[in-house]
Image 1 (cartoon, rainbow, N blue to C red):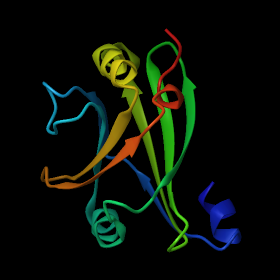
Image 2: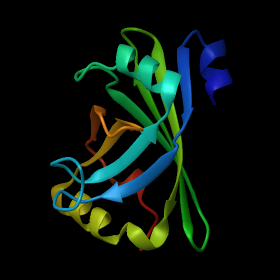
Image 3: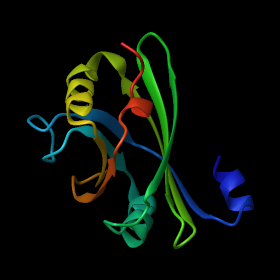
Image 4: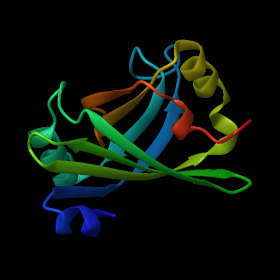
Length: 136
């Protein structure tokens, strides 16, 4: 995916999340439900340099599931800077219920990105939660 974007002229940052989990507004480290991704070292530094709250207005989600896991590849695209951030994560399907309910009740969901030390680097709002969640 990153190679394809690069060949199309995008500058890419592909990050395998060191940890990922669904969060709720009450139980998470943020005020908004969604998914929290922890990213390491140099990737966190680059993310911090690239991120702007109003940037990366387009999101693409690729999802796969098995009996126990939800696999997400979320691509955040900023056409103005021709930059793409790709975050890959594996989540425990049994833990996503409350997050899913909040997302569908609100009609939106969020992606929250943190450094390993817990520093919040930024959040993205997604106006359609459906691509993030498997059926049921």
